[in-house]
Image (cartoon, rainbow, N blue to C red; front, top):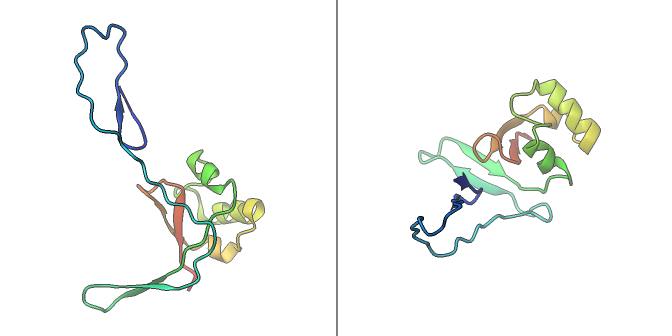
Length: 117
């Protein structure tokens, strides 16, 4: 049995006559992609309105999501080494690359938040 990225379980069996199965409806996996930087700044406030986060989205350079998936860029790297790599390979500003807050989803995915304040 293997589990796909969509959560779908794939079961392989040599003798299908012995295997009883229950098939569910098709699963559609939604994945969103950015094609250009967002034009507006989004605002999120905490329930008590004491904390605010302003957010803007922009696409990653070609190849960076693959480098994250393959472990070339991780949340466990030393901050300055990771920033240097992002600067050399993808022309990220060193100061900006040092301020990566987190990777996601699940702390390892090919997305990250950068504190640009």
